[in-house]
Image (cartoon, rainbow, N blue to C red; front, side, top):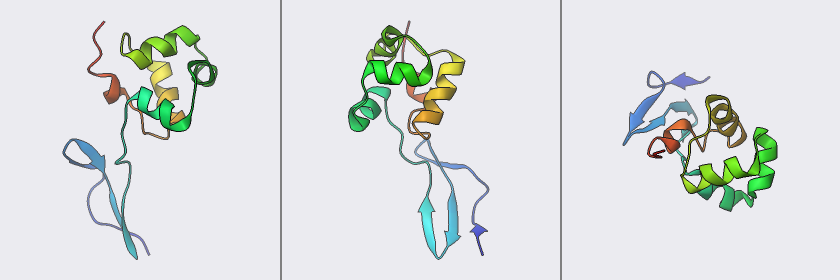
Amino acid sequence: MVWNLFPAPSKVYGIPYTFVLDTHVYLIHSVRMKLSEYMAIEGLTDLALAAKVKRDRSNVLRWRKGETRPDFVALLELEKITEGKVTARDFAEVSK
């Protein structure tokens, strides 16, 4: 049996979390990172990520460097590809 201990999601230090009791307590979606960090960890090139989000390599380069922000559709794709590790919030500090 699974019990949800808190109304989901809650926040700790601005990071969303959900606790679920199923013999163990799990912290879900607590890993967030910048696009450049994700690409380095996964060994992705600008060209490889561009193919996944169906954008030009130069767009990914500018996103990674923090020069521009992805459009809404690209943000959704990035979040899906990275399994929630890179979100729109990670681009909030970018200034055009």
